[in-house]
Length: 381
Ligand code: BGC
Image 1 (cartoon, rainbow, N blue to C red):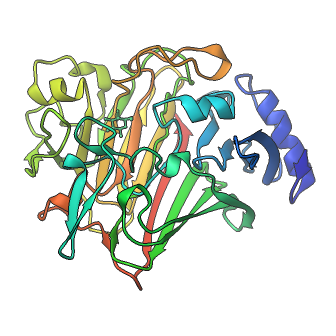
Image 2 (image 1 turned 90 degrees about the vertical axis):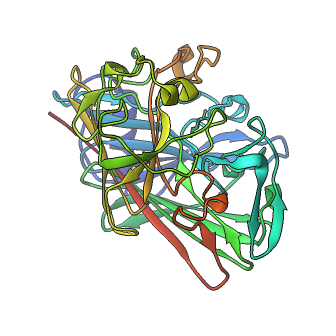
Protein backbone atom coordinates (compact mmCIF):
# COMPACT_ATOMS: atom_id res chain seq x y z
CA UNK A 1 0.00 0.00 0.00
CA UNK A 2 1.37 3.44 -0.89
CA UNK A 3 0.41 6.31 1.37
CA UNK A 4 0.42 9.95 0.38
CA UNK A 5 0.18 13.07 2.50
CA UNK A 6 -1.06 12.96 6.08
CA UNK A 7 -0.53 9.37 7.06
CA UNK A 8 -2.64 9.75 10.20
CA UNK A 9 -5.56 10.85 8.10
CA UNK A 10 -5.04 7.92 5.76
CA UNK A 11 -5.19 5.56 8.71
CA UNK A 12 -8.47 7.03 9.88
CA UNK A 13 -9.60 6.64 6.27
CA UNK A 14 -8.86 2.93 6.46
CA UNK A 15 -10.88 2.72 9.67
CA UNK A 16 -13.73 4.62 8.15
CA UNK A 17 -13.73 2.39 5.09
CA UNK A 18 -13.63 -0.79 7.15
CA UNK A 19 -16.62 0.49 9.10
CA UNK A 20 -18.84 1.30 6.11
CA UNK A 21 -22.37 0.60 7.11
CA UNK A 22 -21.61 0.74 10.86
CA UNK A 23 -21.94 3.91 12.88
CA UNK A 24 -20.27 6.23 13.47
CA UNK A 25 -17.05 6.71 11.49
CA UNK A 26 -13.91 8.06 13.19
CA UNK A 27 -13.19 11.60 12.11
CA UNK A 28 -9.68 12.75 11.33
CA UNK A 29 -7.37 14.53 8.98
CA UNK A 30 -8.14 14.70 5.29
CA UNK A 31 -6.11 12.28 3.20
CA UNK A 32 -5.61 10.61 -0.14
CA UNK A 33 -4.64 6.96 -0.09
CA UNK A 34 -3.51 5.28 -3.27
CA UNK A 35 -3.49 1.51 -3.68
CA UNK A 36 -3.23 -0.86 -6.64
CA UNK A 37 -6.65 -1.82 -8.05
CA UNK A 38 -5.84 -4.04 -11.00
CA UNK A 39 -4.01 -4.40 -14.29
CA UNK A 40 -5.19 -3.74 -17.83
CA UNK A 41 -4.68 -6.53 -20.41
CA UNK A 42 -1.58 -4.61 -21.65
CA UNK A 43 -0.14 -4.60 -18.11
CA UNK A 44 -0.77 -0.95 -17.32
CA UNK A 45 -1.65 -0.39 -13.69
CA UNK A 46 -4.92 0.90 -12.40
CA UNK A 47 -4.97 2.47 -8.95
CA UNK A 48 -7.67 3.28 -6.46
CA UNK A 49 -7.51 6.73 -4.85
CA UNK A 50 -9.46 6.94 -1.61
CA UNK A 51 -10.20 10.51 -0.58
CA UNK A 52 -11.20 11.05 3.07
CA UNK A 53 -12.37 14.42 4.37
CA UNK A 54 -12.41 15.82 7.92
CA UNK A 55 -15.93 14.49 8.51
CA UNK A 56 -14.89 10.92 7.62
CA UNK A 57 -16.72 10.95 4.30
CA UNK A 58 -14.91 8.93 1.63
CA UNK A 59 -14.80 8.74 -2.16
CA UNK A 60 -12.98 5.94 -4.00
CA UNK A 61 -11.92 6.81 -7.55
CA UNK A 62 -10.06 4.64 -10.05
CA UNK A 63 -8.11 5.88 -13.04
CA UNK A 64 -9.91 3.40 -15.34
CA UNK A 65 -12.70 5.55 -16.75
CA UNK A 66 -12.16 7.97 -13.86
CA UNK A 67 -14.94 6.06 -12.13
CA UNK A 68 -16.26 6.84 -8.66
CA UNK A 69 -16.34 3.31 -7.25
CA UNK A 70 -17.40 4.06 -3.66
CA UNK A 71 -18.92 7.06 -1.93
CA UNK A 72 -19.53 6.76 1.80
CA UNK A 73 -22.00 9.34 3.14
CA UNK A 74 -23.57 9.65 6.60
CA UNK A 75 -27.28 9.23 7.37
CA UNK A 76 -29.24 11.24 9.96
CA UNK A 77 -27.67 9.26 12.83
CA UNK A 78 -24.15 9.62 11.42
CA UNK A 79 -24.05 6.08 10.04
CA UNK A 80 -22.07 5.80 6.81
CA UNK A 81 -23.16 3.78 3.79
CA UNK A 82 -21.80 3.47 0.28
CA UNK A 83 -24.37 5.32 -1.86
CA UNK A 84 -23.16 4.53 -5.41
CA UNK A 85 -23.58 1.37 -7.48
CA UNK A 86 -20.44 -0.25 -8.79
CA UNK A 87 -18.38 -3.38 -9.25
CA UNK A 88 -15.85 -5.12 -7.01
CA UNK A 89 -13.08 -5.53 -9.60
CA UNK A 90 -11.47 -3.86 -12.58
CA UNK A 91 -12.65 -6.75 -14.77
CA UNK A 92 -16.17 -6.01 -13.54
CA UNK A 93 -15.89 -2.38 -14.65
CA UNK A 94 -14.45 -3.40 -18.00
CA UNK A 95 -17.40 -5.67 -18.73
CA UNK A 96 -20.48 -4.00 -17.25
CA UNK A 97 -22.55 -2.00 -19.77
CA UNK A 98 -24.02 0.68 -17.48
CA UNK A 99 -21.16 3.19 -17.11
CA UNK A 100 -21.24 2.87 -13.28
CA UNK A 101 -19.62 5.98 -11.76
CA UNK A 102 -17.62 6.71 -14.92
CA UNK A 103 -16.53 9.88 -16.64
CA UNK A 104 -18.37 10.24 -19.93
CA UNK A 105 -16.84 11.75 -23.07
CA UNK A 106 -16.39 12.96 -25.58
CA UNK A 107 -20.13 13.43 -25.73
CA UNK A 108 -22.44 12.65 -22.81
CA UNK A 109 -25.74 11.11 -23.96
CA UNK A 110 -26.83 10.67 -27.56
CA UNK A 111 -25.89 12.10 -30.93
CA UNK A 112 -28.68 11.31 -33.41
CA UNK A 113 -27.90 9.07 -36.40
CA UNK A 114 -24.28 8.93 -35.23
CA UNK A 115 -23.30 11.95 -37.25
CA UNK A 116 -22.94 15.71 -37.01
CA UNK A 117 -21.71 18.61 -39.10
CA UNK A 118 -19.16 21.10 -37.84
CA UNK A 119 -17.76 24.02 -39.82
CA UNK A 120 -19.02 22.49 -43.07
CA UNK A 121 -17.56 19.00 -42.49
CA UNK A 122 -19.60 15.89 -41.72
CA UNK A 123 -18.29 13.54 -39.04
CA UNK A 124 -19.40 9.92 -38.69
CA UNK A 125 -19.36 8.26 -35.28
CA UNK A 126 -19.81 4.64 -34.15
CA UNK A 127 -23.44 3.53 -33.75
CA UNK A 128 -23.50 1.95 -30.31
CA UNK A 129 -27.15 2.59 -29.40
CA UNK A 130 -29.45 1.63 -32.27
CA UNK A 131 -28.85 4.21 -35.01
CA UNK A 132 -27.25 6.64 -32.54
CA UNK A 133 -24.04 7.27 -30.63
CA UNK A 134 -24.30 7.06 -26.85
CA UNK A 135 -21.76 8.38 -24.32
CA UNK A 136 -18.89 8.88 -26.77
CA UNK A 137 -19.07 5.66 -28.80
CA UNK A 138 -17.69 2.15 -28.39
CA UNK A 139 -14.70 3.18 -26.31
CA UNK A 140 -15.57 6.49 -24.72
CA UNK A 141 -13.74 8.15 -21.84
CA UNK A 142 -15.30 5.58 -19.47
CA UNK A 143 -13.09 2.90 -21.05
CA UNK A 144 -9.84 4.85 -21.09
CA UNK A 145 -6.92 4.82 -18.69
CA UNK A 146 -6.41 8.28 -17.20
CA UNK A 147 -3.17 9.61 -15.74
CA UNK A 148 -3.73 10.36 -12.06
CA UNK A 149 -2.12 12.78 -9.64
CA UNK A 150 -3.01 13.17 -5.97
CA UNK A 151 -3.57 16.69 -4.71
CA UNK A 152 -4.06 18.34 -1.38
CA UNK A 153 -6.21 21.46 -1.72
CA UNK A 154 -7.47 24.06 0.74
CA UNK A 155 -10.97 22.62 0.27
CA UNK A 156 -10.10 18.98 0.80
CA UNK A 157 -8.30 15.96 -0.66
CA UNK A 158 -8.34 15.67 -4.45
CA UNK A 159 -7.21 13.64 -7.40
CA UNK A 160 -6.54 15.07 -10.86
CA UNK A 161 -7.10 12.85 -13.90
CA UNK A 162 -5.79 13.63 -17.37
CA UNK A 163 -6.59 11.97 -20.67
CA UNK A 164 -5.39 12.93 -24.15
CA UNK A 165 -7.86 11.81 -26.80
CA UNK A 166 -6.34 11.52 -30.27
CA UNK A 167 -7.61 13.39 -33.31
CA UNK A 168 -10.29 11.15 -34.85
CA UNK A 169 -10.78 8.95 -31.77
CA UNK A 170 -14.29 7.47 -31.94
CA UNK A 171 -14.86 9.74 -34.95
CA UNK A 172 -14.44 13.09 -33.14
CA UNK A 173 -12.11 15.74 -34.57
CA UNK A 174 -9.17 17.35 -32.79
CA UNK A 175 -6.60 16.19 -30.28
CA UNK A 176 -8.36 16.85 -27.03
CA UNK A 177 -6.67 17.15 -23.64
CA UNK A 178 -9.18 16.62 -20.84
CA UNK A 179 -8.54 17.15 -17.14
CA UNK A 180 -10.93 16.25 -14.37
CA UNK A 181 -10.33 17.10 -10.72
CA UNK A 182 -12.36 15.29 -8.08
CA UNK A 183 -12.26 17.04 -4.68
CA UNK A 184 -13.98 15.70 -1.59
CA UNK A 185 -14.53 18.94 0.27
CA UNK A 186 -14.72 19.28 4.01
CA UNK A 187 -18.36 20.35 3.52
CA UNK A 188 -19.23 16.79 2.32
CA UNK A 189 -19.28 17.70 -1.35
CA UNK A 190 -17.86 15.68 -4.20
CA UNK A 191 -16.78 18.49 -6.50
CA UNK A 192 -15.96 17.61 -10.12
CA UNK A 193 -14.16 20.19 -12.23
CA UNK A 194 -13.72 19.50 -15.93
CA UNK A 195 -11.35 21.40 -18.23
CA UNK A 196 -10.33 20.65 -21.80
CA UNK A 197 -8.57 22.12 -24.80
CA UNK A 198 -8.44 21.04 -28.44
CA UNK A 199 -6.17 21.69 -31.41
CA UNK A 200 -9.10 21.70 -33.92
CA UNK A 201 -12.77 22.66 -33.64
CA UNK A 202 -14.72 19.83 -32.01
CA UNK A 203 -17.80 19.12 -29.89
CA UNK A 204 -17.59 18.22 -26.23
CA UNK A 205 -20.02 17.32 -23.44
CA UNK A 206 -18.39 15.80 -20.36
CA UNK A 207 -20.27 14.37 -17.39
CA UNK A 208 -20.15 11.77 -14.64
CA UNK A 209 -22.39 8.71 -14.62
CA UNK A 210 -22.70 7.84 -10.92
CA UNK A 211 -25.77 5.81 -9.95
CA UNK A 212 -26.97 6.94 -6.52
CA UNK A 213 -29.11 5.11 -4.01
CA UNK A 214 -29.25 7.21 -0.86
CA UNK A 215 -30.49 4.27 1.21
CA UNK A 216 -27.24 2.50 0.25
CA UNK A 217 -26.09 0.76 -2.93
CA UNK A 218 -28.08 -2.43 -3.38
CA UNK A 219 -30.72 -1.47 -0.77
CA UNK A 220 -34.08 -1.61 -2.55
CA UNK A 221 -35.16 0.59 -5.42
CA UNK A 222 -35.26 4.35 -6.00
CA UNK A 223 -39.05 4.81 -5.95
CA UNK A 224 -39.31 6.33 -2.45
CA UNK A 225 -36.57 8.89 -3.12
CA UNK A 226 -38.05 12.40 -3.34
CA UNK A 227 -36.66 14.55 -6.13
CA UNK A 228 -36.67 18.27 -6.88
CA UNK A 229 -35.32 19.47 -10.23
CA UNK A 230 -34.90 23.21 -10.67
CA UNK A 231 -36.38 23.29 -14.18
CA UNK A 232 -39.59 24.56 -15.76
CA UNK A 233 -38.90 22.79 -19.05
CA UNK A 234 -37.50 19.53 -20.38
CA UNK A 235 -36.47 18.28 -23.81
CA UNK A 236 -38.96 15.65 -25.08
CA UNK A 237 -37.51 12.78 -27.13
CA UNK A 238 -38.45 10.38 -29.92
CA UNK A 239 -38.49 6.56 -29.61
CA UNK A 240 -34.71 6.49 -29.96
CA UNK A 241 -34.38 9.00 -27.06
CA UNK A 242 -33.19 11.77 -29.40
CA UNK A 243 -34.61 15.21 -28.52
CA UNK A 244 -37.29 16.46 -30.88
CA UNK A 245 -35.86 19.98 -30.49
CA UNK A 246 -38.81 21.25 -28.47
CA UNK A 247 -38.43 22.74 -24.99
CA UNK A 248 -41.63 21.63 -23.26
CA UNK A 249 -43.12 23.04 -20.06
CA UNK A 250 -43.11 20.48 -17.23
CA UNK A 251 -46.24 21.98 -15.67
CA UNK A 252 -49.11 19.50 -15.66
CA UNK A 253 -46.88 16.58 -16.71
CA UNK A 254 -45.14 13.78 -14.76
CA UNK A 255 -41.93 15.71 -15.49
CA UNK A 256 -42.79 18.48 -13.04
CA UNK A 257 -40.28 18.07 -10.21
CA UNK A 258 -40.29 21.73 -9.22
CA UNK A 259 -41.38 20.50 -5.73
CA UNK A 260 -39.92 17.45 -3.96
CA UNK A 261 -41.88 14.47 -5.38
CA UNK A 262 -41.28 10.73 -5.00
CA UNK A 263 -39.78 9.13 -8.11
CA UNK A 264 -42.46 6.42 -7.87
CA UNK A 265 -45.39 8.87 -7.65
CA UNK A 266 -45.94 9.18 -11.42
CA UNK A 267 -43.36 6.94 -13.10
CA UNK A 268 -45.98 4.41 -14.22
CA UNK A 269 -48.44 6.97 -15.58
CA UNK A 270 -49.73 6.48 -19.07
CA UNK A 271 -47.45 9.01 -20.76
CA UNK A 272 -45.73 8.69 -24.12
CA UNK A 273 -42.46 10.27 -22.93
CA UNK A 274 -42.30 7.90 -19.93
CA UNK A 275 -42.94 4.99 -22.32
CA UNK A 276 -40.09 6.05 -24.62
CA UNK A 277 -37.70 6.23 -21.63
CA UNK A 278 -39.14 3.18 -19.80
CA UNK A 279 -39.31 5.75 -16.97
CA UNK A 280 -37.38 8.98 -16.54
CA UNK A 281 -34.46 9.23 -18.95
CA UNK A 282 -34.68 12.84 -20.05
CA UNK A 283 -32.85 16.13 -20.04
CA UNK A 284 -34.25 18.97 -17.93
CA UNK A 285 -33.59 22.60 -18.94
CA UNK A 286 -32.25 24.12 -15.74
CA UNK A 287 -33.63 27.46 -14.49
CA UNK A 288 -30.35 29.26 -14.34
CA UNK A 289 -28.05 31.63 -16.13
CA UNK A 290 -25.82 29.95 -18.72
CA UNK A 291 -22.44 29.11 -17.22
CA UNK A 292 -23.31 30.27 -13.70
CA UNK A 293 -23.11 27.82 -10.80
CA UNK A 294 -26.61 27.11 -9.52
CA UNK A 295 -28.72 24.47 -7.89
CA UNK A 296 -29.91 21.81 -10.31
CA UNK A 297 -31.57 19.27 -8.06
CA UNK A 298 -32.16 17.89 -4.60
CA UNK A 299 -32.94 14.32 -3.59
CA UNK A 300 -34.16 13.17 -0.17
CA UNK A 301 -34.39 9.57 1.00
CA UNK A 302 -36.88 9.47 3.91
CA UNK A 303 -35.65 6.35 5.78
CA UNK A 304 -31.96 7.28 6.03
CA UNK A 305 -32.61 11.02 5.93
CA UNK A 306 -29.77 11.40 3.40
CA UNK A 307 -29.97 14.41 1.12
CA UNK A 308 -28.11 14.93 -2.13
CA UNK A 309 -27.98 18.42 -3.64
CA UNK A 310 -26.59 18.92 -7.13
CA UNK A 311 -25.04 22.23 -8.19
CA UNK A 312 -23.62 22.86 -11.64
CA UNK A 313 -22.50 25.39 -14.21
CA UNK A 314 -24.14 23.25 -16.92
CA UNK A 315 -27.46 24.19 -18.56
CA UNK A 316 -28.99 20.69 -18.44
CA UNK A 317 -29.55 17.68 -16.22
CA UNK A 318 -30.16 14.13 -17.46
CA UNK A 319 -32.26 12.48 -14.78
CA UNK A 320 -32.15 8.74 -15.43
CA UNK A 321 -33.95 6.29 -13.15
CA UNK A 322 -31.98 3.13 -13.95
CA UNK A 323 -34.67 1.83 -16.32
CA UNK A 324 -32.24 -0.34 -18.27
CA UNK A 325 -30.83 -2.10 -15.20
CA UNK A 326 -32.34 -5.58 -15.24
CA UNK A 327 -30.69 -7.64 -12.52
CA UNK A 328 -28.20 -9.17 -14.95
CA UNK A 329 -25.25 -7.26 -13.48
CA UNK A 330 -24.01 -8.41 -10.08
CA UNK A 331 -22.33 -5.51 -8.39
CA UNK A 332 -20.38 -4.79 -5.22
CA UNK A 333 -20.66 -7.43 -2.52
CA UNK A 334 -22.37 -9.88 -4.90
CA UNK A 335 -25.61 -7.90 -5.02
CA UNK A 336 -27.52 -7.86 -8.33
CA UNK A 337 -28.92 -4.50 -9.40
CA UNK A 338 -32.52 -4.71 -10.61
CA UNK A 339 -34.42 -2.10 -12.60
CA UNK A 340 -34.58 1.25 -10.73
CA UNK A 341 -31.96 0.21 -8.16
CA UNK A 342 -30.58 3.76 -8.37
CA UNK A 343 -30.81 7.06 -10.22
CA UNK A 344 -28.34 9.25 -12.13
CA UNK A 345 -28.11 13.04 -12.16
CA UNK A 346 -25.90 13.74 -15.16
CA UNK A 347 -25.12 17.44 -15.47
CA UNK A 348 -24.54 18.29 -19.10
CA UNK A 349 -25.38 20.20 -22.26
CA UNK A 350 -28.51 18.84 -23.92
CA UNK A 351 -28.35 15.55 -25.84
CA UNK A 352 -27.79 15.80 -29.60
CA UNK A 353 -26.81 19.48 -29.38
CA UNK A 354 -24.42 19.21 -32.37
CA UNK A 355 -27.52 18.58 -34.53
CA UNK A 356 -29.87 20.98 -32.76
CA UNK A 357 -29.18 24.59 -33.74
CA UNK A 358 -31.55 25.95 -31.06
CA UNK A 359 -29.76 24.21 -28.17
CA UNK A 360 -26.78 25.82 -26.40
CA UNK A 361 -23.67 25.08 -28.43
CA UNK A 362 -21.25 22.29 -27.50
CA UNK A 363 -18.57 23.42 -29.94
CA UNK A 364 -15.06 23.88 -28.57
CA UNK A 365 -12.58 25.76 -30.77
CA UNK A 366 -8.82 25.63 -30.57
CA UNK A 367 -7.61 28.38 -28.24
CA UNK A 368 -10.72 28.08 -26.07
CA UNK A 369 -10.81 26.29 -22.71
CA UNK A 370 -13.78 24.15 -21.80
CA UNK A 371 -14.54 24.55 -18.10
CA UNK A 372 -17.49 23.20 -16.13
CA UNK A 373 -18.04 22.43 -12.45
CA UNK A 374 -20.53 20.11 -10.76
CA UNK A 375 -20.88 19.51 -7.03
CA UNK A 376 -22.75 16.66 -5.36
CA UNK A 377 -23.36 17.78 -1.77
CA UNK A 378 -24.39 15.29 0.92
CA UNK A 379 -26.19 15.98 4.19
CA UNK A 380 -28.95 14.39 6.25
CA UNK A 381 -32.13 15.55 7.99
C1 BGC B 1 -28.91 7.41 -20.80
C2 BGC B 1 -29.68 6.11 -20.77
C3 BGC B 1 -28.67 4.99 -20.76
C4 BGC B 1 -27.83 5.15 -19.53
C5 BGC B 1 -26.79 4.09 -19.35
C6 BGC B 1 -28.10 7.48 -19.56
O1 BGC B 1 -27.37 8.65 -19.54
O2 BGC B 1 -29.74 8.52 -20.93
O3 BGC B 1 -30.54 6.02 -21.88
O4 BGC B 1 -29.32 3.76 -20.77
O5 BGC B 1 -27.21 6.39 -19.54
O6 BGC B 1 -26.22 3.71 -20.45
